[in-house]
Image 1 (cartoon, rainbow, N blue to C red):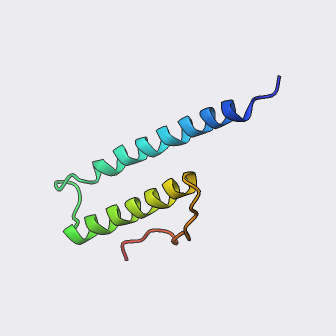
Image 2: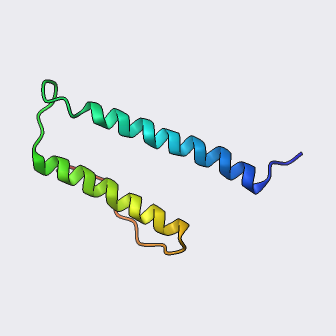
Length: 75
């Protein structure tokens, strides 16, 4: 029997959401000042990029598709 659209959404959305959550946890490992050197400005740029993409993605689900930004860089 073919997978329904709902079942496919649940399978893919759960996997992708969990992947994002895992990546955020990994990003959190970069907060260790004993292992990394970063500025407050770097932190602001990182979270601005994450928040911008989160807003864009949420808007897609709400029916408003904004223009995507390019890849994130600290340089």
